[in-house]
Image (cartoon, rainbow, N blue to C red; front, top):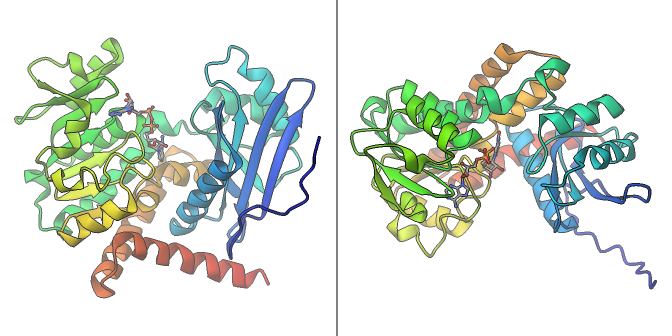
Length: 367
Ligand code: NAD
């Protein structure tokens, strides 16, 4: 086999500190770990299981974690791992255990759940090496998707962003794209604040009801029938139409790139709070801001899950996690809105500035 000796990993002032390829001949496990930056502490990031994942994708995800963890003021850097396998594989346990043993000595990387892995997988990793977040409640973990940590964080952000945009919370209407772990909990916490949920979607399509959708009922129906489309007395729409509906607040909580330059002109929401990762392209974000639509970037808005994970890692419990999410997301959103207004920056620029300032301070202390 021809070997290439070039050091061709992409790198900049932040990292990546380590890019490690794993192979276990006994099980066939092939994996990649990128530990991007550890200036703030050991890197936290999920383990993604996918058949087609590559080093550059893992690096981009690790960098997003570096920024998210720094912006949230967590004592953690950013990392990510990928295992090359079908997420529907029958025997995940063998692969996950082999993966765990391979990263035993990579002590500055703390794995967590991501696409294709869940708390059961974290239980196997924990048993092998005693190091992970997102483990089952029975092993001392905090089930962040069950308690709705990310959705709770999005609601805290909305509590400041709506008044900032001159919208009265109890008069506001909400559309949620992706009624899953993030979206349904966001809808629950936001409607508890008095906001009216008028539209919701999943991979089967969208529903709209101007008078409001009952979140408890919608959650029950989605769990029982598998789709929001089974909700009675609501107008059915094609999925992509949801992001173009008139509403005060839009929470995209499903897929990347759902608002791009191709459809941004049709978006009528007054505020967008990004629940998913990169649901709005950066060009589209700027276009929205230029016409007065406030768009709170993903790595500020959806940090509730990782804040919960960091609390779990430090030995804290559920109540402590919710308090930390509220405090951190409230102060970060306040700061972001201040920087956007005072320095006339786009929200993503302001968010980058906040994250980079914290990272550079931490890196300077390490010299
Ligand atoms: P999930 O699988 O629980 O829910 C996703 C929902 O989106 C499902 O209801 C699915 O049917 C729906 N969906 C899929 N494609 C769609 C489409 N084209 N249009 C409308 N709906 C569609 O996933 P999740 O944990 O809620 O995560 C959602 C997003 O948020 C992902 O991008 C994830 O990376 C990101 N995120 C999750 C967390 C977390 O705490 N779970 C934290 C930060 C970021």
